[in-house]
Length: 165
Image (cartoon, rainbow, N blue to C red; front, top):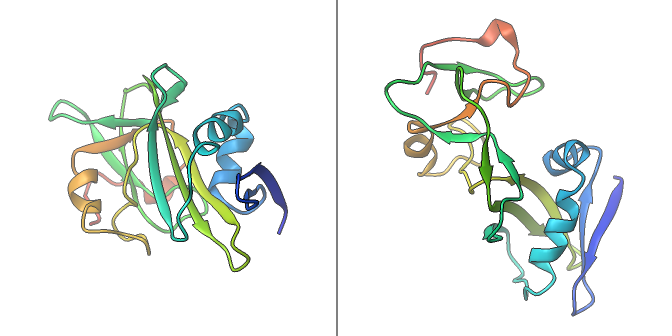
């Protein structure tokens, strides 16, 4: 695993990301400035020894989010992103919108350090239905939210208008 250390906590632990294999690493490769935002929000926090899903409002626009709330006027489709087997919900002809929020998912490792599992600009969102980490909030959330059409490259053979979940 290729570990990139983002931050050393006050109590001596490291917060790191696997830049090659993790969702966070892929996101940071496209939005490298987010590393500084992560440092900004995590430096003053006293971390717990459990998995954490965190959402921070930085009080200023920090970028654009691909997550939008949908209405009946939106044209919705479902597809599997490239290299994934879970369907995501997309809205056609919608654009990313400015966001002040940063979402971060971290988990402790066996050495007491923390691995950044995922991060994105925008509000916290539960995993998609069908994901191994699906929660009770997944279906209700994703029935009223979607990703903008160009948020991810999709497997074109999987595109459908019929909800798969």
